[in-house]
View 1 (cartoon, helix red, strand yellow):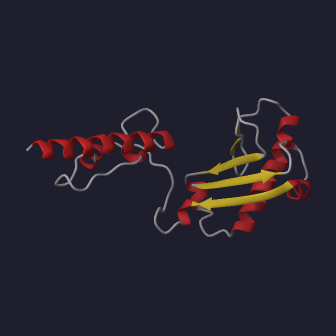
View 2 (cartoon, one colour):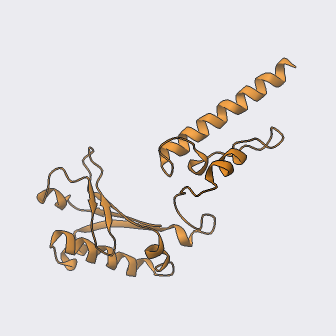
Amino acid sequence: MIKFLLEFKTNFWKDFDDETGFLLTDEEIPTWWTQLPSESNLLTGWLGGPNATKKIFEPDPSLLQIALLSLSSIFHIPPAMLKEELSNYKIINWLNHPHVKGGYSYNTLYSDKSKEILATPVNNTIYFAGEAICTGDSQGTVESALQSGHDVAKMMIGHLRSEKKE
């Protein structure tokens, strides 16, 4: 996946709809969201799956231009005006990240067994945590990563307490 963080001088999208939260479109960068309910001038764009893979080697300036063209089409604002309105940006291309090589996890036919294996400590010394092995409803989210980390920390503390009793 590729994530676009675009900070603008104003939150111009409120001119179109004061309650804009998520925008799901047919544009090249199809998914956008605001920071509602917080007031912010930040728009986050998201491109995932095979369409993101096609852009793995695109340089940031080219990806930024694609993002601005997508927003231009959504809001009917010329790309040059959007670029002038842009105050800062960051593009996170997880496909290019040397230690990640992807984005969010997703379930397969073997996910339950894989999660069970990863949730089992190795010799009570190696523990795994993260959104990919969370068994809750919010897989692929920061919340699931935090929950998984919390669960593993409790497991480790329980193991340490049982060792002290022995």
